[in-house]
Amino acid sequence: VAALVCRHNPTLLWARNGADVEEINTTRRHTKRLGDVQLPRRLRATTDLEEAVSDADVVVVGVPTSGFRETVAASAPFVRPWVPVVSLSKGFEAGTMKRMTEIVTELLPGHPVAALSGPNLAKEIMAGSAAASVIATADQEVAMELQSVLGQGMFRIYRNHDVIGCEVAGALKNVVAVATGMAQGLSVGDNTRGAVITRGLSEITRVGVALGAEPLTFAGLAGMGDLITTCISPLSRNRFVGEQLGIGRPLDEVLAGMTSVAEGVRTAPVLRELAERLGLELPVCGEVWRVVAGEITPNEAYRGLELAAGHENEPG
Amino acid sequence: VAALVCRHNPTLLWARNGADVEEINTTRRHTKRLGDVQLPRRLRATTDLEEAVSDADVVVVGVPTSGFRETVAASAPFVRPWVPVVSLSKGFEAGTMKRMTEIVTELLPGHPVAALSGPNLAKEIMAGSAAASVIATADQEVAMELQSVLGQGMFRIYRNHDVIGCEVAGALKNVVAVATGMAQGLSVGDNTRGAVITRGLSEITRVGVALGAEPLTFAGLAGMGDLITTCISPLSRNRFVGEQLGIGRPLDEVLAGMTSVAEGVRTAPVLRELAERLGLELPVCGEVWRVVAGEITPNEAYRGLELAAGHENEPG
Image (cartoon, rainbow over all chains, first blue to last red):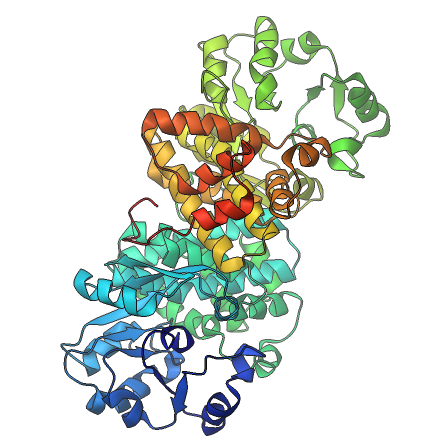
């Protein structure tokens, strides 16, 4: 996102890791995440959070969900009044089960808060391919401003006022991507992949609606769009984890070999707790949290999915 | 479908082509469509329509939409009273713009009529992979009976009362699959593929709702499920046609090389007329009917899709 925005707006990227910052500033690369991709010359990075935040008119937070609260809390003293905060992170906080924008509102009350979500594989966008995304925020005036700051060339941004829906969709699609990856690893075929993605979206929608989201959001880019891209793309980390589990590799080994976070693995146990609290039955996601917890194998999960079929609108 | 049903119910398959019937009855194969797949020994085929229909307690029609009316009309004198007719064909009749079950109702008034639709790649089902499908019919008693006749082992069948929705979804998904195939042929990336499938489903839903369907149907297996499978599977004929157009081959040449029908190519011009009559704007499907009509190239189609982005719920 920083690489896109910096083309038209002065942008300062904060990163925790000094070696990453050094690499970005000197070689214009971030090999660990983007391989050979050349970053724009205008993009500058720093490890100094105060420097990065204190002069910003828009703050964009794109850290893993496990470090989200800590990072926003450390930034809070330096964020100027009225400045909107945009979250790119997808997941729920373990324990509190809060969405990322809820954490922002808690730590920076009074600031407009938004979530950016959609079918956006970073490597494809950096390669100049077209992509569409959704900026979700309550105030449509703020949304229109952010639309023009963040949208650049082939990267189109739609607005949506349903923040809860966009965030729930972004978080839970990773869990369904693990399920679809398992299907692929087990070679159960594209009929089943199509069915798992579809029944998965229906589960995501039920969770979202129970949390106050609008059903229509899940049919949009941040819902179905992001879910499909995540489930079909060879570049998706969550789909990859599922696939490796499906071919029989142990979870620890798969995660140890990855340089970046597969949020679906973290979201699954939080979703389990959330589903219990909301009293929702989620057969597809349920198989994922049981596999991640080591209670069943992917093979057993797929056998578990063959339930009696009733009317389509019923759960199960 | 005949190969599935014959395992538990006496089944007689009608086919127009004597050589196909001969091959099925003697070698238990239908090479043209199913390659090396071995058909069950219990499956018998005939070219005699009267023989196939006159003794049937359920009639299943799976011919291309261009031959649908003719085939049902020829069968009508032999269909016994009360016998339900199930359509597997996906599309609208050119000229009348009727759905296939509307043709059945016209020619066989008083008979229960149903459509079977869903993510069902024949080759995968024949290979024993799990699949889920939807039987759509107004009478839920009939639906439950058909559920047990057609559902076998790994082939699960859900019920849905929304016949219009299931048929519209089945017909239009082929048009969106051509669009997705073009995206793949042009190598525009998975972000765009996810976005095209999503915006495509939104167009399908708008057409369906305008024709009297329920929106929820399009989020189900006959809607989103079938759409995704068709758009991602290397086995899909409509996706294949789009891909070949995307890499620059002329339509005539692509169709000449195929042994079976790509209904999306036929449905596109009918949809164009239907959309005009309904006053609907369909950017994704519109690019397909313009490419199929030879008015623009796939490359121009994809440039045309980069519209100004507004609120997600608006068309465009």
